Image (cartoon, rainbow, N blue to C red; front, side, top):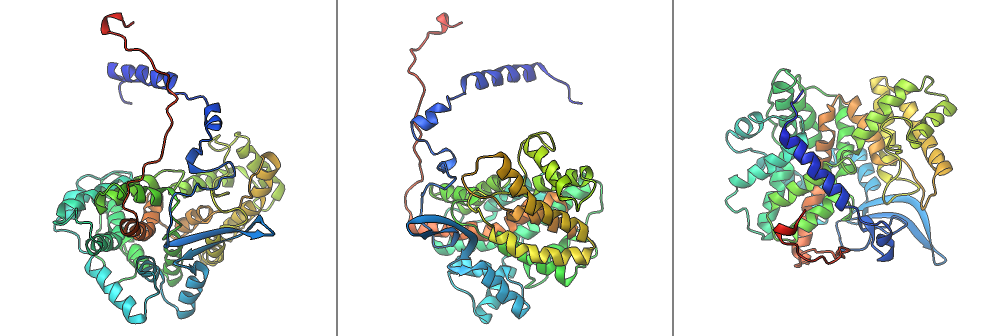
Length: 453
């Protein structure tokens, strides 16, 4: 146990002053019509920009009224569900195709996709000794910090780091898209060996290897995986690749880009945003909650027992006392999250392959019961439903992926969306993002040092 020092007590005392002086009267937010979190009272985001990269639909106008509908997600105007159906029908992976679509606003031809895969493969070479000197020499149990550190370090190997021309920024983005899977896996291998004491193995990527296959092969000691495992992981990457300009990490990308900074700094900032448990780390909260439910609920097929325990969670009597049923509800979607709907069918297939049917049944019951429990206890401005995080952690656990990589896998996918938005911001908006804040601090006279108590 760490020894408490005099400085620790001083910091604690100073922190108490921050708390005492930093409390703003909550009534002032309503008085000045402040949209906390850039959202109105109904949870709708305040319009702060335009984008052509993706679109989220969750309602329609009927007789002049806004009516909630099943959620839909579009990449460059194309329904994600249709993209996935097309890939499945042709028996091919879709993540690289989606990356091409998000970056270049069109679906690639067979040759264009092949050339793009080759370009990513060529961009995948890390600088000499980078793994040894940057990743292996400073392992940590926080993979998102490792990723951010690696991205910022890569900037020192770029001789044209501050060139903001589109061709140079695209080069940098493609480099990061291609390297993110390796940076994530190698960071985990360093942690696994030097901190957990497991064997160390660093597998090199194969030429033109799809991202889903590369992730599974470089992560596993025996390099083996099933076709369904790679297919479901590819699907997860597609569904996490982009989600409108208003999500926290993408907005962070645009805010930092608007300052005129370099690509590595903008993407590192996005990584730090995604790391937060209210954003990319949400599936870990779901997994923690589900672990407790599996222990406390005796009959996984008893709706009443499940609903009773969900009510305890809602009443802050169970799990982490937050009052939140993690994985249920979304800032935008109300009736349904299209990503969760698409994911669910493949989750069921994977559960059958892994012998996890009972666990899948529990997830399905919670998905159905949780909105009813929430509606019975809380005033609802919009409906709630399962979001993509509700199932993604379960999928990753069935794939045998370590929890330390759950959020980095999100980043491996979302780097494509961040890249598209960074380029869009550079091309269309030449103005730094600077929202207004109103000061509510009263003017106070200066007190000379000799008169202070």
